[in-house]
Every structure is written in structure tokens, then in C-alpha cells.
Length: 84
Image (tube, rainbow, N blue to C red; front, side, top):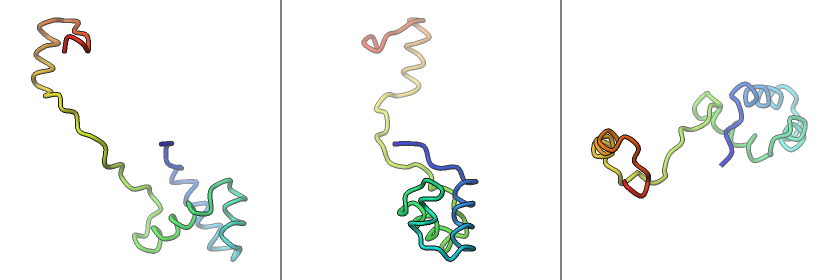
């Protein structure tokens, strides 16, 4: 997944939309962002008074025990993934 757009860009696009009165697709095209992205930013601004991206969540937790991993690396000094 690509990195989120900067907060500065998000704020500029939202401000441009609010000031211009132009449709979302027109403003989004001017800044080179997807209209759906601008819609999400406007909704976040309305609901939370910020356009900052949500914190990244989900994914799979590593089944490796950090303490055990550290011990193995210290003992073997140069453990490979296979050795672990």
C-alpha cells in the first residue's frame, strides 16, 4: 500500500475545495488526487476536525518471541532465518 498523502497537501486540497465552490472532481483533478480521497478528507475534517491519516492497523502479529530471538542471536552471533 502506498504511503498516505502529506497532511499539508490534504489541507491545501480541502481548503481549495471549501473556498472555490467547485465540484470535488474538478478540485481533485487540479491537485492530482482521486476524488474519493478528497471525499474521505472532507468527511474526516467534518467529523474529527482533522485531515490527518488514520493510524495504520491490522496485519499479522509475528509468532516469534522477541526474548527467545534475542537470546539465539546473542548466542549464535550470526543466526540465519533458517537457524532461527
